[in-house]
Image 1 (tube, one colour):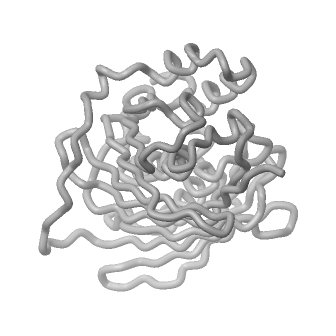
Image 2: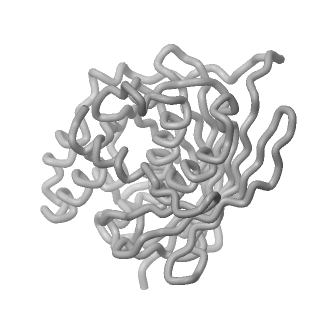
Image 3: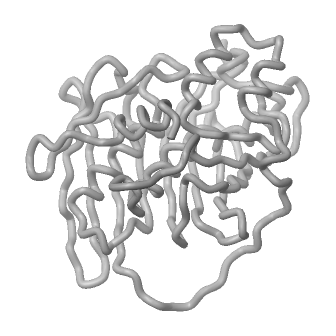
Length: 291
């Protein structure tokens, strides 16, 4: 396991301060605010700590309310909405400086047999044939060195490989509003931490890294890394269909059906390398042209 991955696991290991209250810390992100994927992942950890382990998460719905302060702790207050025979529901409010910055509702379900079908996995190259994120970034002479280093630091715990050039790699002309990345943790998970909730939490963390890329591609924009847009996540929803491991290759197939009114919508599916549909994701974010 890489040190960066261990640091991420430590970040996700919340301190319990009351029966339904947890405290998490933050770290610097590529922009001067708390990374949205971190808050969503920590909130899901807080919810999951109040649910029996035989009920894995099957969905979450979240809203980003305010920018998080990376220099202050975040308190996660869990509301135990329902404990049913099959489903368990939790609501989490993340608070900083006395104000809510994020809310999450999550549902957990006891496993049961049922109908089964899925959308087929789209074609994608083998991830081992693709350049690593570091290799790509080191080749982009148009990016400022500090931007490259911030991106590398923010993604050091994850081996994330673009199938095509990312928005900040090739921009200026519109492209198809579709993006594919392969990802897995930068190291294997094992021992006491290797539990189903952790893999779901890690996928939640990564899911906020690239989902709005397809919005940028549709308009030939490079994103914050080149300064031609400003943006932030507004809301985020995920449905966990089938078990998966975050330390094995996952294909994140993303597209944008719409952008309007200063907002852009991204939707995606996450597949295991053997073709099982594991997760569906939808996110809307602020996407504005700087004035």
